[in-house]
Image (cartoon, rainbow, N blue to C red):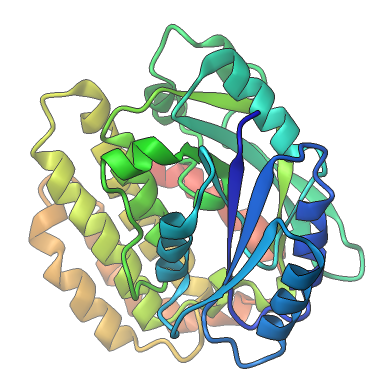
Length: 339
């Protein structure tokens, strides 16, 4: 029986970590270890983790000096003893059959990576759940003769780069020295995902939603975007634009580079308007202008994005509740038309 290592970075998640841990210990698949890596929380999260480790021998309560979720995941990778790695955020939770379903896919296909869809769980009075399809359920699974990553890019679906939604063979990760960048506040998971993918792993899809991604409407992470987070996001996209530029002779990487470029533009146009009201737009404009030469030749529409930065303050009044986020997810598709 394969062993799975579930790595959970924990930072000030006292209201949610109990629910997360309970969803892990209730898994119908028994052979696993749970590595709770506390990132020097300032609330009762470390105590909760230690109490659970005392109750269940499958749980290990680890700790590190505050260095971010990426560093916590790296520490978990170093300590993991399982054949496959799962990354679960401390405020999310899993369906009890998640690992069982993953293992069935692995038994049939022996992949290096399992890509999964997930569910948005809204932490409000309704507690409503919304499906999030990164690929159409069932459809992409039937495309085994094709490169699935290329299939996803070609059909305009969101990139399955969220580390928490994927399962990785530890040996593959170790062989290629894939690690999360330290001290990155946004997009460290995308960077890790791309590190894995450029080494051409064998991968397949789990055609169901078993991961519940908590999205709190009143304090969504996307609505608390800061200059630092945006700069981290843009630096990761810039890094991969340059790296993939050197690999453009390959069709898949050429298409992936176009996705990276579109993501830069769409973040500029559709994320900035709902960012923190404390955003320093002059600083943001300087950051984007410094990238102008890198993107402008292939993506002249970026000039429009630079122009729009000065208008962002005027758009902040539409920042209310979570309905705008859903609208923007749809509108974002239009950015793909601008190449």
